[in-house]
Image (cartoon, rainbow over all chains, first blue to last red; front, side, top):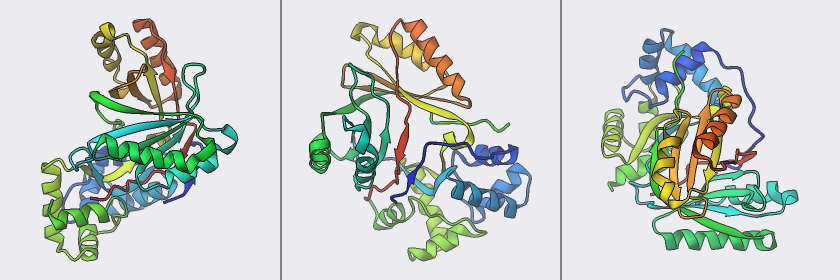
Length: 170
Length: 147
């Protein structure tokens, strides 16, 4: 759970990988032999599909395989983007600590835009209510202690667009 | 929520097997039959409790590029700017947030230079500054909501 991935790097990725991604990015077929069904779509044996998926999983192209929960429908209706100004020289250590908290689902380092935007660490906090999110944000603040040189929580008030990331089959 | 759905959601936010009969293997782990697991997953999708079931891809590792960008949009221009920003196919998500920087969107493209182009075009079309905030480090994220 706690592995830190280095800066993103590109990994070999060919047309068959691309076809497999295109066939599975909206989900696996819910049938007894789903990889066989994908194999049928992309035109290679199921063993090849499974081997490719396994490789993409170990390369980090696939983050994980399984349930992608709809947080909102599950009752996590308050999603706060907490943003933090922390010292750059300890940001990796601090990011690891925050990323490991069970109520933080995404934690990233991003560039500041001074003077308007002093925040360099982003942590997405999910809660059932805004108060619950604020309580969790306080826990992060306690954990950061002196390294918390200012933070804010931005709640989303409206989804303006949501299409998801898509890659084309070829 | 049914106890069985709770079990499925908590047990399989990752780690779904890659093998010939993965549903049978997964079902056994939580004491279900293969048919029952498939049926519950279909229902969870239908009820929209789950967005999808399958691999979650990291598009940057496929050679693509993603950034998070934000604009401080003056309130009277909000709808107009929304139309301009959403009009780009490369804009995958766009959220209104309660802050001076009130529009936050994700730009995704297959090539990093496309990102710069889209941001430049949005700045031209709106006359507003776009704050480009690509992630420079990721502190590992795991879906760990428990229900």
